[in-house]
Image 1 (tube, rainbow, N blue to C red):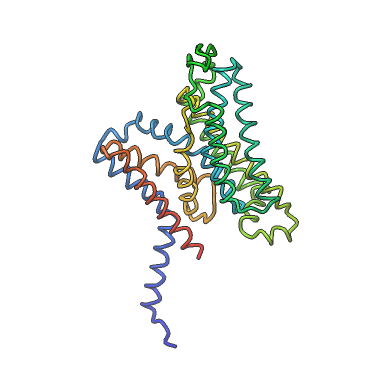
Image 2: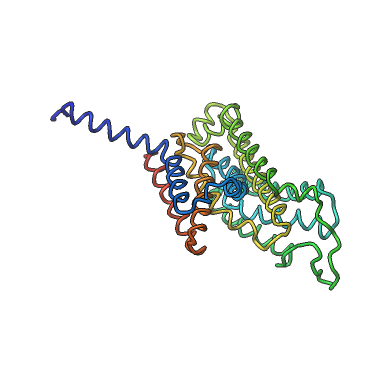
Length: 332
């Protein structure tokens, strides 16, 4: 077998290094290139107000995507997060408008309802051994139907007309209204990202989740309670989906029909894009945030360039496909 001469060896090495560089820093490099392109096209893109607008627009996506990231860490996948966000959105607003409850009760009710979905998902996945993608797809439709039934297919808002013809008398708390406003919506996002990054990276529980995601049999043989951590992962996924729905409710001050559904695709894309950020090669909170930033910049910049809204999914789908191809090619 012929040996490679030094020139060929160096060429192979340079090509490998280039791929490694693009794998580690390609997403961040793409963000900078997009910023330059959009700034040249429209100088208002890099103004402070627009940067704040981008961060605000990705806050809900990031929070929901963090939940998906946690489910991915145990080699799971939660497709029900969009519907859980819709349910949480509907319950928290209805608690104010229909039942005149305070902020604490409204938020608590939404979170409890969402955690019940997490319990259902984890029970079927862990005990009945149904593949996570299939059962969370089923619960996505179930929870979506529950949310629609609960609201009777109507938008829940202050002074809405009730079924008996009267007007709703409950008012949304001014304290709750602040949650979805700048800077609090951005602060919540940053706190969630930092907290989950610390949890997954620097605690034994986070490391156990990564071990389970990497090799479940090895995790079992090591004495890690795999089932407990998988249950915890789906509960946390439901929790962050609920928080995303609550923040969305505070931002728009109404509960729209299937309000959380549009966030599913963006959240999934952000979580998978995050795999390659800084060469992590695994789901991670910081990478998910960077993925959400990339999607947010794309959406904002394309809107400024007057790209039709119906073409946005083409761009986001292409970005997700590229991220998946890069991730799975690297794993191979």
